[in-house]
Image 1 (cartoon, rainbow, N blue to C red):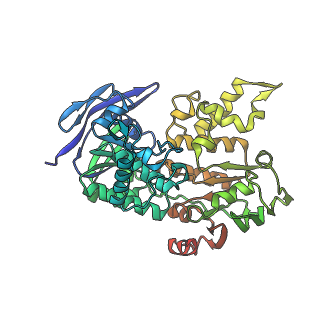
Image 2: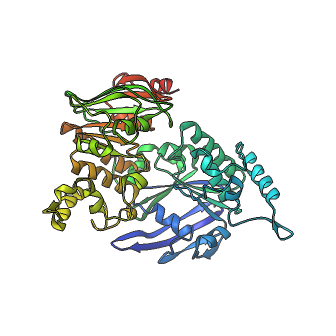
Length: 492
């Protein structure tokens, strides 16, 4: 029998309107990389928060190294050797790398903070991981991948025996992901137990030895990874066989809706030209930093341009503000839904109606009945899982938050929706639902511009693919000729 370092023993917890975890029961073997997967809302984040001392279970036990424990604060969990690398970094950006790694755990010598010893130890930790980072660098100056590594060093500096990693690759490039995977393997070789949470199933198969699946707050199964294939794992997650992960519907493209001609922004974009036709999904591929998001922001009037033109339905709208672009029929599902797509403390219904308030205002007054009516239509249509339309957006799972953002633009009836990383942090079942919504849009004669770092998604859902590199469009591929190899050759 494996040496079980952590046992989740019949854990249950409820929130208003939902049973988040229901009698969840499984064990994690010492010195393994253990995958934790499930759809958005399956209970993964809730379970992690219980292990991290953020929530307290209503019933059941956490058994750590053979002894029942209950953490009332994150500090207690850390003292017991459980550390979490969250999807949203918990770093103090104005401080240095060293200061972040030792935050709350300063070293002292003769009653004074021993900066020399802390810098030395920080360097040693980074060298052990094979990473070159200046320990005196201010964290805000670091790229995302290096911030991730500082977060990992901070986590392991508490002498953690168990490292929980929540969607750690979500914002990393392919090269940065490989660096992080090597770090995980090194930590695991040194004896650390890693609990790895990801919606990217290829990572789960690549890294883990065992996988636990949660669905609707219940434990579906814990299985050695080698006994699973992608189809079987997806079936366990969604409770049914998923016949087609990319249910692309082919629609005959209509007239050109949008023409972008020689768009320039010094140091960012160079001679960007493309068109978008009615009834098509236009994919934008490229490595992180290639200029895809910047292109969308420039077209929509969020960022200024130095030269070039934007023609919408034959009308020159160059220089329009984002507000004017919205009125002209353009919309944006942004890359960062939490900070740019939603107002977290507002309700689901308030987020859905906020772009098109004119539909719920009569005589200068907001009509609650109309707000309920229109938001309710989209909650039902998009199958947004929320205890009620009055639930604050911050309490929804990632997939349901994304659906709220999409609902906002559907209610606005936008002709062209730019969707930047539309399924980032979204489970495989919710991804398919989002793809079906995209199909609905193009069947209605709308168009979608999809920016994505996931090549299978780009290949599976695009009619045409524009490939970007260092602020330029370096190629256009038709659906029939596009392959991962062809896209990557252009990307680099």
